[in-house]
Amino acid sequence: MIPARLIYKTPVLKILDQRLLPHKTAYMIVRNAAQTAKAIKDMVLRGAPLIGCAAAWGFPLELKACRRPSSWKETLALINSTARVLKAARPTALALFYAADRMRGKAACFIADQKDFSPKKYAVLIRSLEREAYKITEEDRLACARMGELGAGLLKKKSIVLTHCNAGALATMGIGTAVGVITEAHSRNKIKHAYSSETRPYLQGARLTIWELQRSKVPSELITDNMAGHLMKTAGINAVIVGADRIAANGDTANKIGTYSLAVLAAYHKIPFYVIAPTPTIDITLKTGDEIRIEERSSEEVTFINGRLVAPKGVRARHPGFDVTPAGLITAIVTEKGVIRPVNKKTVANNLKHFAFL
Image (tube, rainbow, N blue to C red; front, side, top):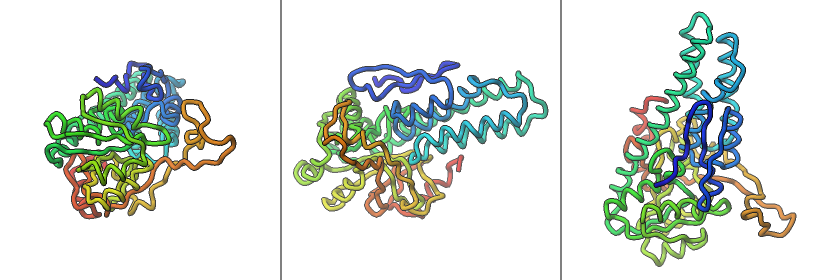
């Protein structure tokens, strides 16, 4: 079993500290929106769906922690500032923005229906936001289960697969996205072997994904990032399966840095390349992936490993946290609504037709 990622027990949220995995299981306690945003920014938790779920809980936390407003106007201002604080934590993952906007909209609708302000009604608002946050987390759990089923259906028996970064249970409130597909396929006896790239510089694959695969008893091995091409050529890999942080309207997909390289290699070796991501990852306001904002993280995450300097002192290092894979390199995108194939503006739009929160 994977430890619980988020535990809400008013007035705190306990967040599994993924920086300590796989060697230690511990939780960080946050009590307001600013602390939740800092946990997101500092990588206490990561994975686009999980970030969105945590952000949702940031709203009732903030309303409980702050000095109670004296009017609905002040309350709405507090809600708006909470959304800004949370959305500033990380710029690329759309699930964070989706959850914050949805929670803000829920609060605004509640406030618009009120005539007089009272402490009792303020408490009702908090309970309403708690229910909405729970709904967001439950939707993520169900979406993961459905994507697991759909994605597993794309794989042949005795598949040998490669995944990148961590798109498993630790990145969601369910079984995961890409890794969820692998574990579901394994339960159907369709996985012969799985490879997890280590995912430099933050080592999510080495610390988290391979740990999840081991716990699910999936036959698996860890590889360094620069081994992928060799193994595609020699190891009989049947599919590359990754998650996503934001998908443009035409299907261009932002995911952990290194994903684009894997897509190019997969195309050369004629290996299917699958993206597994829930519908709130799709950003129809962006025409192409060129418009996706790429987060630049600290160079120390490149030059240090576990606090130890592994490069010359004072060296400059780049650390874009994500890259964008063009839609033309993606065989299919799997959401909880179905399989998008071929990947283009029309098929992406068709997938969104029945999505309730556009």
